[in-house]
Length: 128
Image (cartoon, rainbow, N blue to C red; front, side, top):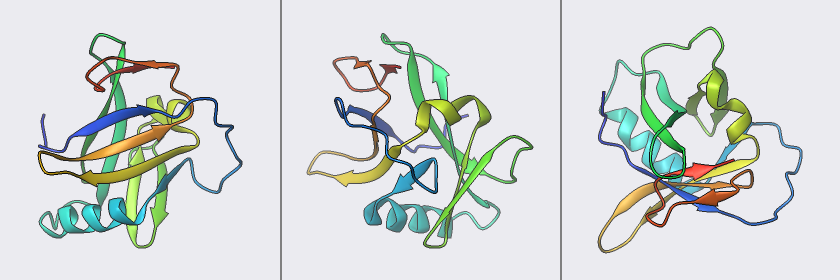
């Protein structure tokens, strides 16, 4: 099920994971974009972030509208935005910053993940 939301992987090198309140932190641009997306989906309680096996490097991020919180989902609430992290993705996303970037040719969510060991050339898949 494709929701039309895209994401890109960015390796952030040897940055240390710093203890945080949330498993995932949102930038202001990401917060604004998620609020905009959710305003068009009144039945959604938030966005759900996950990972799945795909691509030339092994894993890729998934984003979809969430209608309810799963039993094992981690909930992140920041500035009125609710993100649900799939239980299979929680360890992969610890310490990650989720951003939203717009350029002349594209607009997408970008995950700045300190756990990534490598990415593919197109930026769609990664390994941890």
